[in-house]
Image (cartoon, rainbow, N blue to C red; front, side):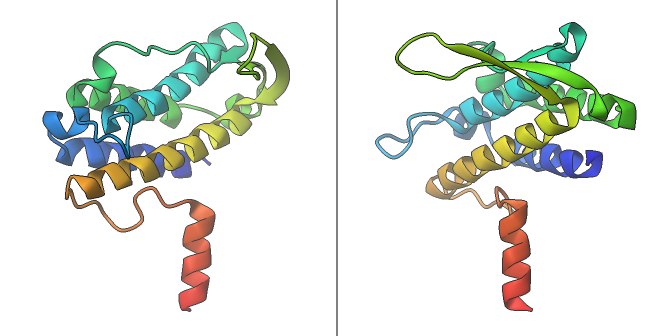
Length: 168
């Protein structure tokens, strides 16, 4: 599990090491309403919510830093992803199995926060899947910018398996 999480983080680091600050901040309306930097920030926010949630036994993905340097500065994002990577590497099997409460809003018409029981492993699976989904959007933004990304960037693991088996 940790190895797959590190693969996901490494995809983000690869992207951040090839993108310029201008490309990272660019928005291309009407097809895109946010920059790739906003997507990276959103990915990092989810991992940070897990990290912070362990401290108080409550993960809250709704507490995000929607402002700040993460969405505007790829160097800052690299630093955060490297910190997340270091944190992932030190997790134990016991850490992954730890039960934790997840709090999240579930309505767009009124504030409705629900709490459910989860585990650190389950929330990492979610954060990884969520990151891949946002990498797919970053791939589309990069395509519009004519920025070449490696094959498979933003590709869901199940889709990769399907494609491997289809081509075999």
